Length: 283
Image (cartoon, rainbow, N blue to C red; front, side, top):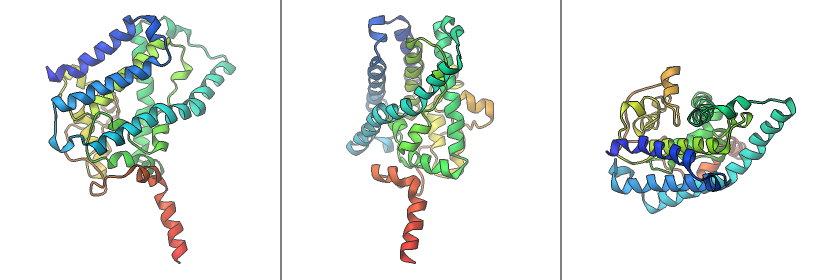
């Protein structure tokens, strides 16, 4: 039954946004509440169905993760809106782009469209981050986490968090409920994919969606082993583009599993520049 928790959670989320009262689902803040509730639920599961004792959450890890969750929901969300979503919406209107056909699709198809659009962009951005040093420097802090927990997907350098949030969803005409449902589904899948929960979903789920087994392998301690399973939520993309690898890792991290503080996470991409400046100063 534990193995069925991720697919059941996805089904419940879709049912809620499809059948929930418009007075609730139509509110802009409803997605914030939904994401918080689903994340909290999965976080609590870690205390009931723990996967690895070495990943057990302590106070320091909890408050660090919570800080990043708040950062993503406030600063990163605002920056993404101002620098990406609003310009895309303005360009769409200026160019007269319309996708009204999307408004007439079945609700589940609309949600699937949101999920695919977001994940397709994230997959290629994520893959780029593992294959080009300037982008890896922004993403590497996320791989310095030394354990996986429900909120760990939010941990990372702010530059990476912004880059990975980019998508073209704003170019499509879709009802708010479908958009929020897609966001919520992605939250459920990616949170389970980071959570210390001993759930191994059946193939009808794990063939399409990323699980903790797939993602823990991506967080392996040697860099080359991280260059696989890029799908944050849709492992199907890895299967299609040849980057899928089977396996699981119980030991995660980088650079001899050095855990970075929040400050170290923030300045990590600038370390080469800082090192050069220090070298010039001592020359």
